[in-house]
Image 1 (cartoon, rainbow, N blue to C red):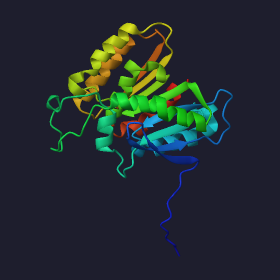
Image 2 (tube, one colour):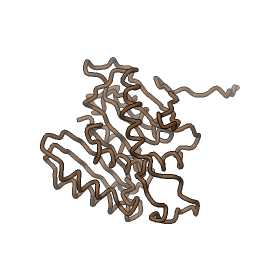
Image 3 (spheres, rainbow, N blue to C red):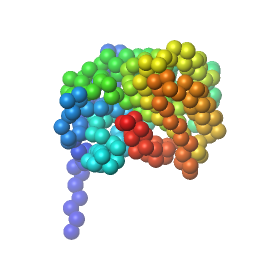
Image 4 (cartoon, one colour):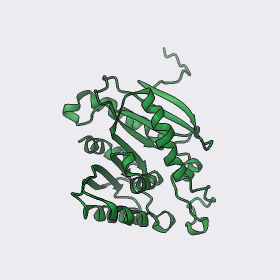
Length: 268
C-alpha cells in the first residue's frame, strides 16, 4: 500500500534566502554548503546564474563527485544559485533585465514567439548587487576562499558573464560559460572584448571554460568559436582557456553534458 503526501522534498544541505537589492529587485538564493569541513583558506564557491534552472544540477554534481575528489577532480565547494521568485526555470523578464547592457528595442531582432522584448539594460546594477550585496552575505554565512570564485552563465547569462569578465575581471578567478548570446545588440560585447584584450598582462591568473552545442544555431556556434580563437591568441598571459563544441547537444542540453568537465577544469 502506498501513502501519498504533499510534503515538499528538501534538498540535502541547501538553504533558500530571499533577498531584495538596494535597487528594489527581488531574488531567491539557493545555497549549498559541503558536508566536509572548510579548508583553512575557506571553500571554493561557484555563483550560478539562472538558479531556478541550474542550481540543483550543480549542487547534485558537486555533492556526488566531491565525495572522492582524488578520483573525480571535483572538490567540495559552495554552490550559490541566483534565482528569482517565480516557478519557471527561466524567469524571462527578470533575466532579460539583469543580464543585458542597455539596448534599443529597435536594434533587436523580432522575438521568435512574436511577443515584445522585456525591459533590458540592468547588467551594471546586477554586477554591483553580486559584488556588493550577495557576496558579503555569503561570506558572512560561510567561510569562502576569495581566490577561488567562479561565475557560471548560460545564454544571456553567458553574455552577462562575459561583461563581468571584460569589466570586473578580478571579481572572479574562473568563468564557466555556455552558449553565450554574443549576438545581443549587434555584438556590441566585442567592443568591450577588444578593450579588455588590449589591457591583459602577464600577471593575470584566470581560467575560462566555454562550450556550445553542435545542434545550436550557426551564429551561436560561430560567435563562440571566434571568441575562443581570439582568446587563444593571448594564451600564456596568465589566462588558461578551453572551448568545446559538444556533439549531438543543443542549446540547453549542453550544460549538464559539460558540467563535470568544466568543474574539473576550474578546480585545477
